[in-house]
Length: 76
Length: 203
Image 1 (cartoon, each protein chain N blue to C red):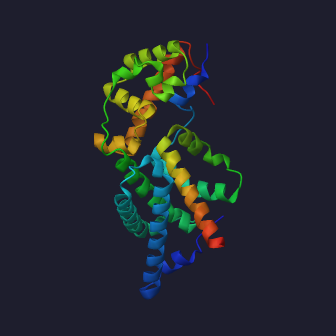
Image 2: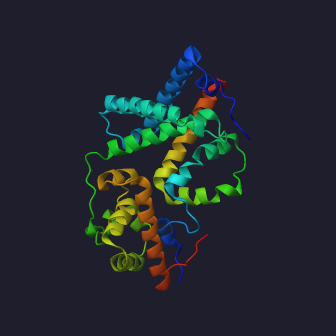
Image 3: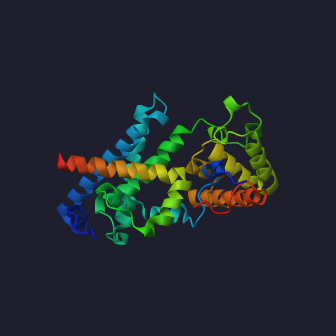
């Protein structure tokens, strides 16, 4: 029996660079997403970390919101 | 793409009034972003602490500014300069806001979570929707995790304790707590794989 309901509690497998290494990518990632560009494959490990770490996910959401807010402010 | 032509960055590398002006503009940006982050997290913060929260935002902006100025030479231009700078204040502000939200709450290992009636169980266990799976996970936790791994795993995944709050309470770093969580999850995945409940890989 295989049960994917454990995935949320156990996290995604694959290489996870952890919080410190992941934070090196957060600014570049948020700029790419804010521009609406496709996210390159080199962010795959970072995305695994975001899936597995709520704090880094929240921080990324916060930075993305700030980037969008500042962009709107500068355009307005 | 390289982003190293921002006028604030140019002026920060300058001298005198231009540099002072750039520092003032950068600080204003950092305060604004910290306050925006606090507003975004309003639901998780105590309702009557607005003034304290604003102080936290200004402190976060001040500390972020110091960090940015000391690390200016490490900016590689892979993101816009203002995005790179905002990263510092988001990390400072969010860690402070999470600690503030948890300042009156205890962090402790609660073994009763496994035996609670379904309406009081942690949401992540409710979503397993099956007592057999919960018992299998409980057995794996008891059999394979060290005491510290149990504390970190249960606190983070079931009690929703932020890892930087847990790091502060345990006197360590966010990175070290995440490593403990990662190792605990790997042990549990192996145990549940051996017991036939999950695949080793899920991606």
